[in-house]
Structures are given as C-alpha cells and as structure tokens.
Length: 240
Ligand code: IPE
Ligand code: IPE
Ligand code: MG
Image (cartoon, rainbow, N blue to C red; front, side):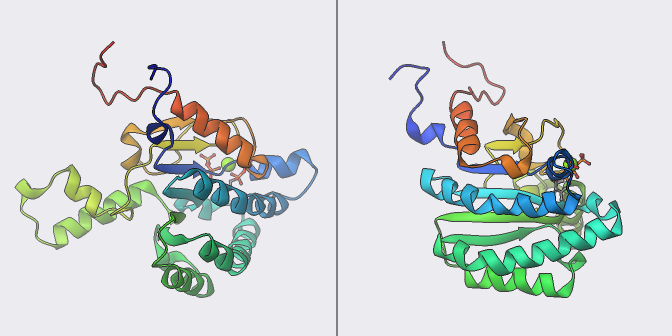
C-alpha cells in the first residue's frame, strides 16, 4: 500500500471532538434572533451522530456550553437552557436506538435541576450501549477540569512521586475516554476557547468555514477524509 494511502483503520479517527461554533452568525446572516441559530444548531446533531456510528468513530465529544458562556446576556443563557432541555427530551430515544452511550463532561452541579435529571437519566438508560460514546461538554471548562483533577489528587493524599501524566488523565472528566484524534471547530474561528486543554496535546485540528447549523454529514466526511491524509508525528521523525 502506498504511503499516501493509509490503512482504513488509521484513517478513521477513533475520537472526534467538535467545537460547535457559529450559531449566532448563522442567525444574523438570516436576520433571525441568535436563539434561532442555536435551535438550528441542534437539528444537524442527529445526522452527525448517525454518520459517526456509520463510519466507525467510537467517541464523539461536543462542546455545547462553556463555563464562560454564562456571561452571555441572560435571555440567551436561559433560552439555551430551554433548548438543551428540549433536545435531551427529543433525542434520547434516538440516541439509544443508535447504540450510543451518553456521557457528560463538565460540572453537573451548575445545571438547573430539570436538565441535570435528564442528563443523569439519559446516562443511566444508555449505559450499556457500545457503538459510540457521546460526551456532551456542558458547563465545561478545560481549566476547571484540570483544577478539579489537582484537587482530587491532593485530597487522595497521593505521594508526589506517583503524580504523572497518566494519573492526571485518570482524574479528568474524560477519564476512560481516549484523547481526541481530531478536533473540528466550525465557523472559521481558530482558537481552543478552554476546550479539552489537556487532552488536545496531539490532536489534529480542522477549521471549516461553515457555521455549525450548516455542518452536516458531507462536511463531517470531508473533515475525516482530510484527517486521513495527515501525518501524525508525535514529536518523532518518521522514516522516509
Ligand atoms: C456556538 O455558537 C454555540 C454556543 C457557544 C452555545 P455561538 O453562539 O458562539 O455563535 P457565534 O460565534 O456568535 O456566531
Ligand atoms: C466556544 O465557543 C464554546 C462553545 C462552542 C460551546 P464561543 O463562541 O463561546 O467561544 P469564543 O468566545 O468565540 O472564544
Ligand atoms: Mg461563538
């Protein structure tokens, strides 16, 4: 097999993480309120999940709401909470049917009780599914995650010499989930915005110009294709 033609199992990322950005600009371009963009940005989710299951991606992590997003105008924050509530209600059965396991990363305690209960119920119902692990990053901040890990390690009385990268990984919200191979940020913005700071150490990044509500199956497959052509070096020199 030619070097430019990697084996299929290497060309499909095991874990894709997505910063779903551009809902507000999508709405503004149509003269609609920002919340209409957020609502539209939930309608493509099902197709993205389906496509991941179809091509054999095992882990999908989506950035839904950051710890910094609380500082948006209150009506947008409240509107978003209402939309998340609806989406969990609407999509749970379909997620279960697809064989996906729901996972949450972030601080659950910051969520309103009705939403928290839905997430916990969803995690319980789907806990034995193994086709895809869907992690929803909600009230998630990469720095908070590292701070929480440090606190847990100290609270456990861990001897200094036992602290290493593996131990830190095991104390993150993502414990048990492999690091992302590919991170996609839609809308043309090119920054990390406090997402998976630790886990992104060797991820490949792709920044499509498409606003999130217009990002569908074709765009996802195109990103996976592009990923398949990348050469991941991990600091080494590859043989020529
Ligand atoms: C991403 O879209 C969704 C959330 C952050 C909840 P934005 O709301 O950030 O959309 P833009 O960046 O303003 O276009
Ligand atoms: C990151 O997008 C958070 C989510 C997509 C949930 P933002 O739109 O909030 O990020 P900044 O403010 O442009 O960095
Ligand atoms: Mg944004």
